[in-house]
Image 1 (cartoon, helix red, strand yellow):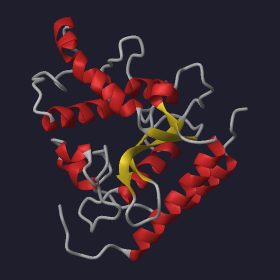
Image 2: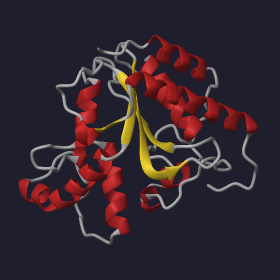
Image 3: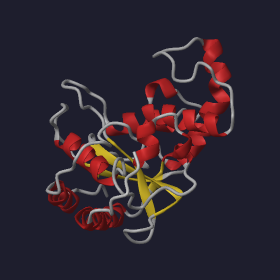
Image 4: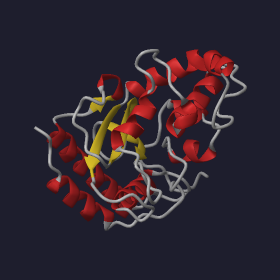
Amino acid sequence: MPTNQPFSSSRLDDLKRFYDLLAMLEERLGGARRLSDCSGKMRWPKCGVYFFKEEGEVRADTGKGSRIVRVGTHALKTGSKTKLWTRLKQHKGITRTGGGNHRGSIFRKIVGAALFDRDNLNYPCWGKGDTASREVRISELPLEKTVSARIGGMPFLWLAIEDEAGPESLRGYIERNAIALLSNWGKHPIDPPSSWLGCNSDREKVRSSGLWNSNHVNEDYDPAFLDELARLIDEMEIPA
């Protein structure tokens, strides 16, 4: 959904502040991590929000460095027991084989779909159904490995937010407002994609937003979430 309207100066200022806050978070964490280097043996908070960057996707308007390409969280259904590392592990894939299960990770699913579109690959069952036969999973392993390498190489940050599971959680508030702020859907683009893999996505919301997200990209954001984000970063306890 392109627009000829100039971008909002207030959104530009909010994005600059957002990236300044993430720079503070990165400093507190001692640097970004890559999923390929991570394991469950590391000390992860039980709950949190994560922010993925992507090498080659450089910010053009808000300062130096890589732009955020995906924001996510977990346990947004009441009663869910999913932990932060559980969700990150689903995105990472299976260390032993290098593969993974894109039917358990929407992030893997949309990255894989963009890869086979760009490279003209043939995976007719990709993304279909919640489960697949052993034969189908074996046939999909080469693409699952490529997805694991792609996502595993993306630097990411995480913010601990130890709240209860549910759609109105503070994690959900931070996630959806960060996505809405970053999204270029229906707006003059700020920090637009370059030769981004996501431009090959079969999802218009991914292509137009510049994010590996579909939910919340067409929503308005509440600028007050930045104050809450600043507080959370300032108060986050970093494991020794």
